[in-house]
Amino acid sequence: MTTSSKLPHRKLGNNGPLVSAIGLGCMSLSGVYGANDDAATPDLIRHAIDQGIDFLDSADLYGWGHNEELLGRSLKGLRDKVVIATKFGQVKTATGQGVDGRPAYVQQACEASLKRLGIETIDLYYQHRIDPNVPIEDTVGAMARLVEQGKVRHLGLCEARPETIRRAHKIHPLAAVQTEYSLLYRSEAEETLQATRALGISFVAYSPLGRGFLTGQIHSQADIAGDRRGDHPRFSGDNFARNRDLVGSVVAIAREKACTPSQLVLAWLLGQGQDIVPIPGTKQRARLDENIGALKVTLSAEELARISAAIPPGAVAGERYPAGAMKAVYL
Image (cartoon, rainbow, N blue to C red; front, side, top):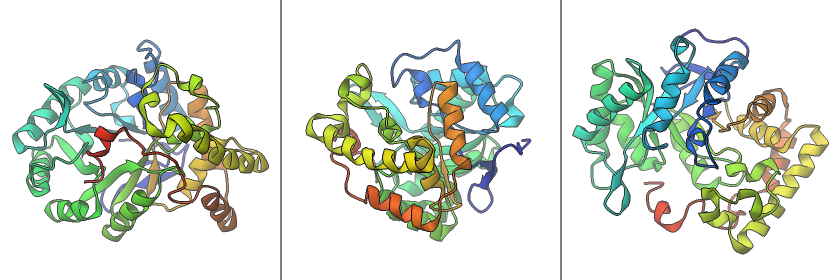
């Protein structure tokens, strides 16, 4: 891969690749937050690469394969310019959705992702959710065999608790752990960060903008009408007003810093350590450019502390997922 010099870069793990300090989460390109526009996606991806973003995050879950296929088409002729991360483990079941971490499925899922992406090797392969019915040693052992086969370069876990991370890392070194992390979700994320930091594993922060709440652009529930956030407790009932008020304090600080709220909270996250790489998602070129602008926002230690105090750990109202999905995280 050819590393762009347009943006600062951070290393994933002790032996992983260099990636742009802000990546691009691709989930929203598959109709999660409103309708997707497949025709516009290649231009967005090329624009991201032109601006210096070279870390793209997908999963076989997103659109049940649609996202990987779309990304594969968008990256024709650009493979050597990006680090591609994708995930496996979430599966359709008779009752909706489940998790499969069996070694045989690990191999099957990887080969299917490679085909959809149209590539020979996945740069970073995550287990998307931990399977409570399969020892993590067995799942990561199967992932390690993918590395031996040359189908995967580096391994990661998503939404894993510290003890699970430590057990997995003994089987094969992890380059990254991906977990939600933002001013609106900190307690468990920062416990995870302590574990990854001790082991030399990078922390990839998804939903760093609080699923849009931290942009300061969500003022009423009408602003999220028609997408899945309406089912999330943070965006429901009295929780919505409480969290909107919390975000108001961030908006005020951003105004003082002459930047947008998105830029402020991304700069805060980047300021928590060089081992953190946020991957905000967007379908819009203007938002992507805005997010990149966070790299130009300089925060002093005092300002970082002030922003941390504006939304302290545990202040957010409501869980980050509906009840059923909460049972599958931090395992």
